[in-house]
Length: 195
Image 1 (tube, rainbow, N blue to C red):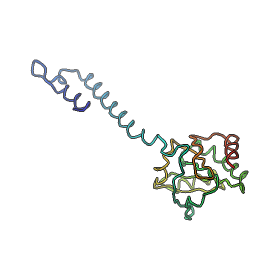
Image 2: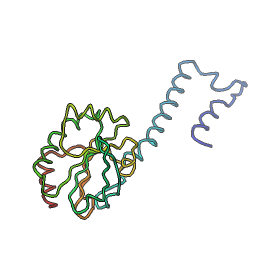
Image 3: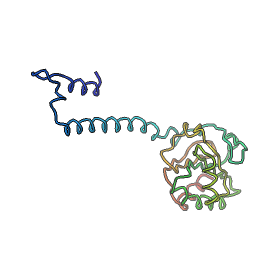
Image 4: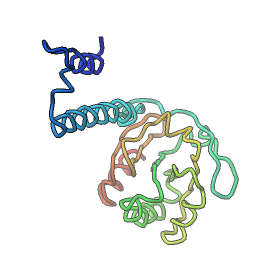
C-alpha cells in the first residue's frame, strides 16, 4: 500500500466505539493534517517533476548533439555547419533578468572574437517568439539568435536554468557548462584557450 493510501486508511479505521478516528478529531486538527498531507504531496510532486529537468543531460566531455533550429527571421541553422569552430551556446528566456544583464557582454565578446573562429549563438526558449523579439528590441545583439519554441533542443541539453552556456571546442566536444554568466573576462580567457 502506498504511503498516501496508508495515511488515508489509518484515518478511516474505526476506534473501539465504532466511530472513525478521523471523526473524533477536532476540525482544526483535521485541517492541519489535511494541509500537511496536501503540502507533502505537492512538495513530492514538485521534486519529481523538477528533478529530471534540473540535471543537464549534456555535460562537459560530451559531444554536442546535432540540431536544426530556425533563426527569428525564419532561416534555419544546422549545427553541422559549426564543425571546426569554437561555439558558445547561451540558452535564455525573455523573462530572465540575468540574460538581460549578460547579453551586452556576450555581444562584446562576439565583436572581439569575430573572425577568430568563435561562433556565438543564443537559443531562446520562449514558446512565443514575440517575447524574444520584444526582449531583443530592448537588448539588441549582433550574434545569432535561434528559436527553440518547441523545446526540441532544450530537451536534449536540459540546461539547469537561464542563462546556461555551453562552450564547445573545434572537435565538437563540450568543454564547459556554465549556469549563469561567468563574466566577460573569464569567458574571454576560456574561449581564447580553445583557439
